[in-house]
Length: 327
Ligand code: ASP
Image 1 (cartoon, rainbow, N blue to C red):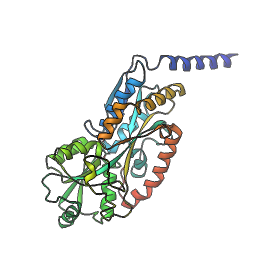
Image 2: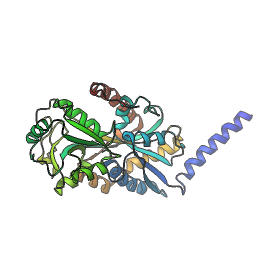
Image 3: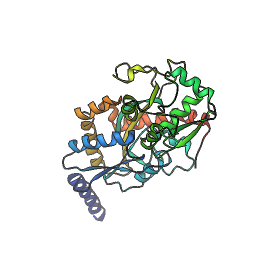
């Protein structure tokens, strides 16, 4: 009898949660990088689209940056599983397990997967004062200035770090540059525009505006083929075209909740996410920034989790070959 009562109380609580969610408390989307960068940009646009999709909700974006996104991700892994704290993370969800010896969370065990959001190419860019204007000139310049240049990134395991590692290894220039970590590529971009660092590889969601305004120089895109449909980025070659065999890097973003978030709330959030990803405004903004919003089948939690598991397995040998780890 007592057991029955406990079960009934638990069921009522679950039902009440789903009925009253989201309530008046805001839903915080934690961005594990600095404000003003590409993940932040996606999160702010997504927050607006999700607000429209989830009646009565109020979304806020919280920047918790540092250590390649792992500080923010840890915060969400340990947050109360009540649907009021979510994480927007990118490929770092899959790269950091190979880089951090003492990671405070397990990507496949400590989160509920809500779904994939988008895919974003990257661009290799340099400060405006660089003498090179084409990718070929740029690579020659890097070799001629070995040991003298700085490459910015958003911390170990970040997309910019990963891209820089892969690119340096592909052109055999691992020792040619000093890496400078920032809390996100928002502040790194300011340093690049200001000429304090020499180059960076970053998502198009952060670079298109700066390239268009002539504040940075772009040399190549990281997708296997050039972005022939994008009005601005179509003018740049892919690294593969420039002779970097097999180079193909696309960044993705996913949305996650702490493990143990009630299933009814997860369903509400997943439904809202799917609706948000069909929001015409959101799609238009992402499109302009070179990002592609994914469709329903890739927003399924199980499909996204399987995708991340595959990415973890794929990135591990790439990162281990680069041989740089952190505690
Ligand atoms: N683009 C960054 C990265 O390199 C992160 C960010 O600032 O959004 O991972």
